[in-house]
Length: 592
Image (cartoon, rainbow, N blue to C red; front, side, top):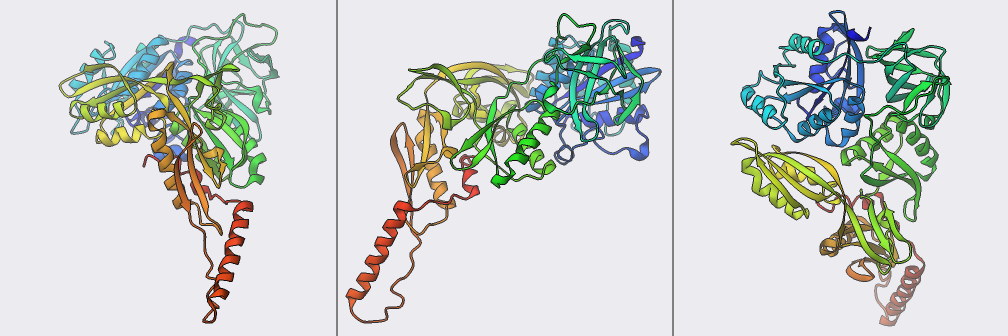
């Protein structure tokens, strides 16, 4: 019966106690025996547990007072708002968790607006009321004024287990039941998938209409790929085999799918004999905003990297990848990410789960360039940037940055935004202590170290979120590094004209420290729009050829020195410079 089902999600700013609240709900409903409980129960990745963050949406089925509660847990970091949208599309309600000592933060704002746009029932939960610094009345006022949510706020302490019963009661009472009919044609949303080496692709689904059973023939709406259902069941959170999933149910489906490319998360499943006229709404595509090149340290690992990306892309479909090659680094892949933390997580997962050692090039964004010959084109790598003589104009992506901060840190934060070419939009006072600041900032200015700098100037109290605002015309140029007269594509940079010379100069100085001295003199040059704007000279390693001359005629010494000089000259014209791997990371550390 769909009237006894409640599908809900937990949304919050990072570190507001969302995973701890999920643990208490699992305990209170006795979904997991106490002897098997551990902290961050739904965070099963080592990376999630080490960093104390949720990276992937998880689903679990609980039973409370004859009601089935399907919880779809979501991440809190700004980079994973894609995961949040995917989870919310499968829900009818959401618990909005707010830290009583921190109040409404930037990501709280973004997630609440996302849930409101999808028309979900929002239950505000004020967590950490046991802390001495908790300001419950102030937090309630912020939820009313900023988020415009009038629903009564629940006061809980997830750490102590206080108020959990009231949360479960509110879920059953306030969140509406799903509206589907078990007898209608099958209409199912795929909200996640994982790869099992024995069972193939495991699809996590929400059945919107109809009933899914073993032996049924189902078809994907977008690709038309058809398969037979081998197994269905519930997530408890392990896979628990069942006989069928009815309208409103959340569970898993196994169909013997072995090819990773045959599944598209967010797709709609339907019966092969009863096709649907349209796909399910409420799901949005992930748009990669940050790009970086990944290359194996050992070129022989290229096939292993290809296989690893295919498998990882199945469980994390939010990154895109395509093969590319570099003169300096060999064969690799250019990968698109949702943000810098997402890049860091994917790199670490590839290295840990697939035993690879990778080099990542400096992250960059996608530029739109209009050339005299070909018109508008998209460029996702500085190495592919057209020649400066062919460029007519360049557009770069902008984002609207929303920062929630204490009033006392307004000046340093405004200065930071000005440094990053930010355009002021609005400043709003939330209370005597807190403010919201909105600026439009080029995406390239925030992907590298903006978050770290913001935390530094605000002593860790500011929080930020951003959303895309399209592209705008900018005065951008490419900077190149020439080593021994040859441009190295992995060191190319794209940035604003006003800063490019200083960035190229700093990179030349850094490379002089990192590249080992050769048997011949090496020039490290920086070039912007065809002009050399910086040069560092790496001196040659000099052997003392006069060591054996302990006396005698000076002409003998001169002959030896002349012979050495000619040898060095010949080596300089023929020699290649070996660049160590640390040098490729120098571009990332320019701002440090």
